Image 1: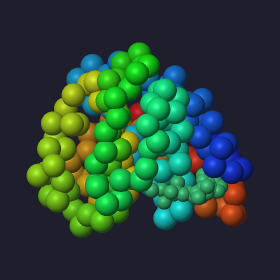
Image 2: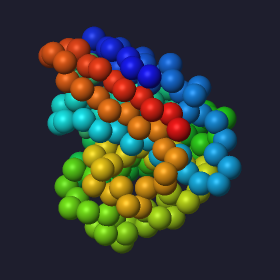
Image 3: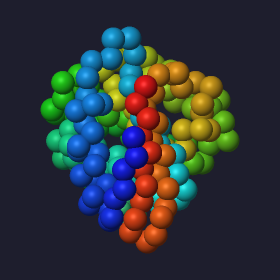
Length: 148
Ligand SMILES: Nc1ncnc2c1ncn2[C@@H]1O[C@H](COP(=O)(O)OP(=O)(O)O)[C@@H](O)[C@H]1O
Ligand SMILES: [Mg+2]
């Protein structure tokens, strides 16, 4: 599905709108939402919108330096913890192994949002939600969302 937004708020509102499609039980493992797009496309902005939709109150900052951040989800049909991973600084998936990412991906109570997910593709599940954000103009973005 393709959406267009004008401004960060609209991208956050869109995240809220698609929460219902995302927030459903995952029988076997964690749900991965893979975010692609250039620097400044709006990946972190989208994650912030989704965190707000889950009623997470902590202000979500980009994990560019910490790599992985996690937040307890107070209100969800399925998930307990939202993980936010930014692979921008990674060369490949082996860099993540030490951080216990396999365990994080294994639990069906986790939703894992991953920026620059292409860099760790070999360890991602085949079933994932893919969001590609294209920069159209200063405030316009095109979001292509593929549900599995
Ligand atoms: N339609 C839009 N959707 C998302 N962000 C937008 C939009 N228009 C402008 N912006 C701005 O673009 C920037 C996106 O930054 P960020 O979400 O950190 O990008 P990324 O994580 O992809 O590098 C923010 O400053 C945001 O306010
Ligand atoms: Mg970012």
